[in-house]
Each structure stands twice: as C-alpha cells, then as structure tokens.
Length: 192
Length: 192
DNA sequence: GCGAAACCAGGACATTTGTCCCAATTAGAG
DNA sequence: CTCTAATTGGGACAAATGTCCTGGTTTCGC
Image (tube, rainbow over all chains, first blue to last red; front, side, top):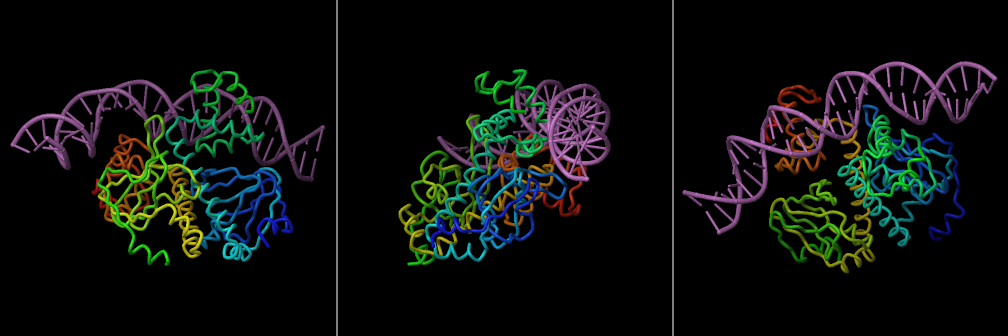
C-alpha cells in the first residue's frame, strides 16, 4: 500500500489551540502529518527565551527528523489554531522508509527543503535590518490569510515585542524606507 | 559496488586556500566529499554582508542538497586551508540514491543531522548573549586544533569584528561570567 | 456580566552593537 | 628585502535593542 493510499485510512487526531503536538526533549511517540490548522515550531532555552523556527500548516510532517536520528524532539510544536493531524506509528514510518522508495525519496526532498528554507531565512534575518524581515513575514502572512500575535511574530523575528512595536511605528511614519510601494505597505501594516 | 568501495577509486580534487568549492546561486557541477582540510560554508546577501553557517571538514558532503532539490547552491563553500575532496558526478549521485538503499538512508541521516545542528545552534545564538556562543565556539576550535581569523569567527557569530573584540575583552577582564573555570577560560582566550 | 489573564502600546533609561575612524602588526607577493 | 594588503586592537559616537513599567483593551471561562 502506498503512502498516499494509506493516508486516507489513517487515524486523525485533534488538538486544541495551545496544546502541544511535540514536546522539546521528549521522545516523539508518533509521526504526525498536519491535515488542517496552524502550529508553531519553536525551541526554548533554559533561560526562558524562545525562538520560533517556523509556522507549520497543512501537509507538513512532525517527528520525522527525531525518528531518523533516534533522538528526542529538538523543538516543541504547539497548535495556534485548532489542528487536525494524521497519526502514524513510528514502526509504520520506519517500514515505509525501508520499503517505499518513493516515500523515502520524498522525505529526502522534504528535509532538503527545510534546510534550504531555514538557511535562506536565517541569513536574511541576520544580514538585513528588522524592517525587511518583518515585511517579508507580513507578505507571507497575508498571502496565507493568517494572523499571528505580536509575541509570536517577535519570537519568529528573534526580537522583543517592544522592539517589534518600534519597527512597526517607524514603518508607519515612513522613518525607514523598504523597497515596497506606500499603499502596499499600509495594507500590510493594517493587519497589526 | 557500494558507496564505501567506490570512494577508494574516486577522483580526488585539490583546492588552494581561498578557492571556492561551491558558488552561491550557481549550479553544482559535482558532488564533493571532503577528504582533508577546512572550509567555510557561508551565504552572502546583496548588501555585502555574510553569515557563516558552518565550518566543514573531513567526511562532509557538498552539493547533495542542491542536487536533491534541483536548485542552485544556497551557500558558497570556500577553502580556508588547502583542501582535498573526492568528486562524484551528479549522475553517479542520483544513481546511488536510486540503487543503494544504505546510501540513501545515510543521506537521510546526514540531512537530518544538519537540521538538528543548525537549529540547536541558531536557537542558542539568538537566546544567549554572545559570550556564551563565543566560548562554545572556542571549545570546538580547541577540540579540533583549529584556528580561525577574527573575521571568520565574527561572521560565524553574526556580529562585527569590533563587537567580537569587545566581548573578548570583557571575558578577559572578568566583566562577564560564563559558567567555566577561570583557568580554562584563560586557556581558550589565549588562542586569539 | 465579571474578573483574570492575555494582548497591545509606548515612555524612560541602560546596555549592546554597529559605524567610522586611526594605528600597529603581520603575511605574503614580487 | 620591501612594499602592499590583510589582520588586529580599540576610541568615540550613533543607532538599535532590551528591560522595566504603566495603563488600556480584548478575550474567555465561569
């Protein structure tokens, strides 16, 4: 049975907003593939600070990395909106890697893409001022019709909420000038 | 023929310090596996700034990600010391993914590990003050008996050289107090 | 509807970091 | 050997960011 076929008859689990699908440093007990809803994938350090790596939605897979490396979760994943997800046993996952070449290959692409995206984003965030990253973020937010709390946005941009507010203000007042039309900018900022 | 066997009779290429093994935005023309020497893997943005993702040495593979995704290089890779590397054709690489299950699986682990490491490091660097990351870096540097230029260290830590100097000074003068013994600290700092 | 908790906004101040310098030292090419 | 380029170290100032705090608004469970 192929992966696509098996998905249809897989068990679906539901999570409320705020519930955690994965917990950092704990073993993953299953593989999840998101069916609907939005989650945040973040890592918290011992000093209480946290960094959001990505917001995950439909089609994205959780627990794969940890299962491949036989290690505990590197991130926590928390539902932002109510979430539905297909659940797979770890055994099933291993078996599919072993026997379904197409799946194995897809997984390879999936991981490669994740590296690609985080590398691109990290570099951008480190090398450009925050305004740029913020606008980039807002474009994606708009494109996908989503809305995140200030705290989440700040954690994603690796700054404080206070600092985020300042940046928004400066953009509104035109103190800084990103390469984007004035009307489009105003449109983006209206969502916060 | 297995991967391990084929390595032995593979072509070896040499690079001088400063030469680039991969060039950002260009297509990879081959897969390289480092045999000796140290390289830096970095990304530069249009404004001239650059961020070093990792220093790569013996055993690490280049061009895999790009080949899997059929895309151009996301980073440049430059030799810091003279480097030797085994070269594989892209066809050979594709073929091995297709036919050598062990290799395919190893590749999966390789990519997963890379995500694991960059995620851990990024989070740490964002959530702790620079002194901590610097010491972490120096420990690795010492462990592997290496020595990097200030500029490279700064690019890796995503700060300026000026800022790096300040941090070193503060550590020397004991203004800040990382959790490490005084003598060991002095030992680490002696390398710069 | 009400109270607690989460969210949003921003003032005031301290700290960190970057930018722009200049000067001394080192390494390497010719 | 010599001269240039790269490397290192740091002063002075500006800009960015964090911290702490206060007050208003929204949200949600009971």
